[in-house]
Image 1 (cartoon, rainbow, N blue to C red):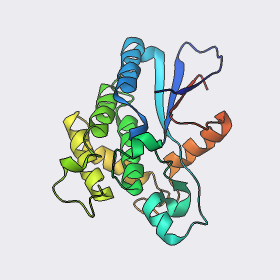
Image 2 (image 1 turned 30 degrees about the horizontal axis):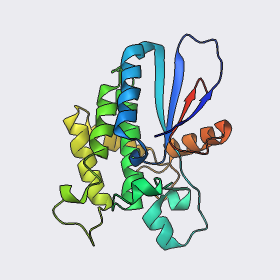
Image 3 (image 1 turned 180 degrees about the vertical axis):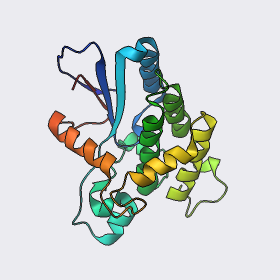
Image 4 (image 1 turned 135 degrees about the vertical axis):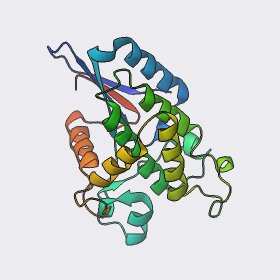
Length: 210
């Protein structure tokens, strides 16, 4: 697996590391392990932030925006590479919402857990559990749905010691009108602006002091 790397030079003693991805399926287990090893080694010397990259399609038809996007088409899933996506039968909506859960778990633990162990364990466990048909009893037409993924994501958050309530509140409040996923999403909006500034065009990607 390859990740695009962009480095900017700064004077701060704290290194800012950004991880950019479309969905957790972009993040292979060995890659996640390497990121955690680096974060665990550096801890307070690194400020690590995940970012979700997305596509914009506000003019897409309603059915597409409902299945693949949030915020009325402002943020739509960037699908995983074909060789990865073909191994899973999970809805685009499910992948996008799971990314929001992961993003919000990071928000809730970043100031209290320097090595972000809960966050990296969540990504690892979710990728290897929540997108597998075999994990669920009944799925619609064999597809892992948004509800399936959300329930599994909550189980993984609980399993790594995170607060399901805090993460759910973060997801809810990330929308301009809390709980209304047709309104703008502030986390995804910030990531979109930064992706444009840094010229992020591939996924996954890493920026250092970007």
